[in-house]
Image (cartoon, helix red, strand yellow):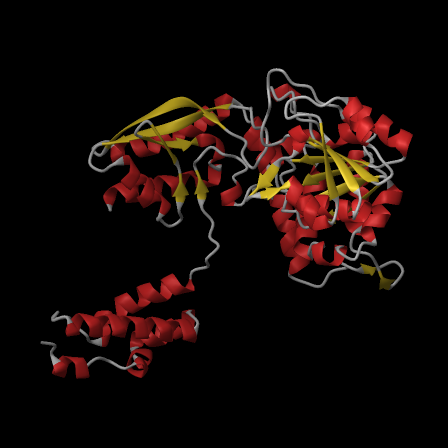
Length: 464
């Protein structure tokens, strides 16, 4: 039977708020969160008493539980974490990390008013896309540029602008799923365009495009296979040849690059990833690509190409729904400015640095983590440094394996799955991967500033 006397002695919300602990909480946290946490804790104590527990229900006794609840409710749902998975452009973990310059520019422009749509020299309203156009034109060699909120939106607005209720010719081998079940055919349908498939899954010839052109053709669409590869008995039509068809029939050619590489990765063993500049030089009328994949910036869809066509896109009413905000502009402009010096871009843009970093540097980082962990976890696990393979991720460079080094942990007292869970639920969360009953911490995606915190998290996971 529940102790009714004790139930009646449960403290009120007001008592908790007026206690010394309550006064401190009110200085640091939001009142609504404090009240919610107090009520939750009191309700939990009431349930314990009803179930026959002999709990201490004084304000001092339950203060620690209340504060724990307050901290939990005060935490942001979007949290920083440590990516130890080795997947550089991890879609589930926010894709690209922004560079220091991008972060600095966000802070400096977002903390005050800015000239987002204002021409300072003329003292009148301006166009927000003018801020980003010049640097994109300089870097890519295109005549004009515009930016929307992601690459799916970039493709969608191109289709809506040039091919609404018209046919779009695309190879069957390029009807890709972008991610999250968003597929090129479905994007076309949403835009009002009519899909005209040509060729086969593995082979498409120039004559397939030529024979498909009719009076209702609005676009020729080339989709880069950025998230998969078909190998073996294959053939595809390069943009340069599609351009000839487009010019002959006066039909725009749109090249959807997806990942948006701006620096050749050939010196790093990646041969099949075209750059935006190369597509423009080949003659593509419009090139679309992402801002947060190989470019290494914020989420955005960049559209570059012929001035006449870009201006037509800018007048599409859908631009209002797809435009980017001032913080994205700030991050994107700062990222693009870094490409003016390719050597510095490779060092200062985190995505590029992680993808092109030498094995020696990664090995040194792995050994540093290993050295810090070896003694504290020696009784609970075998730990070692091993060669492994990282991936680009984010639907980029699907066939590329990047040699890396990992810290491997083989547990004794708990299962490797239990260790992975403890790390994932830690503060901050650490996202690692399991392979052959070992937990792998990939040094490629560990930032140098995170090593001390990572080590603390791993030791804490073993000590819990």
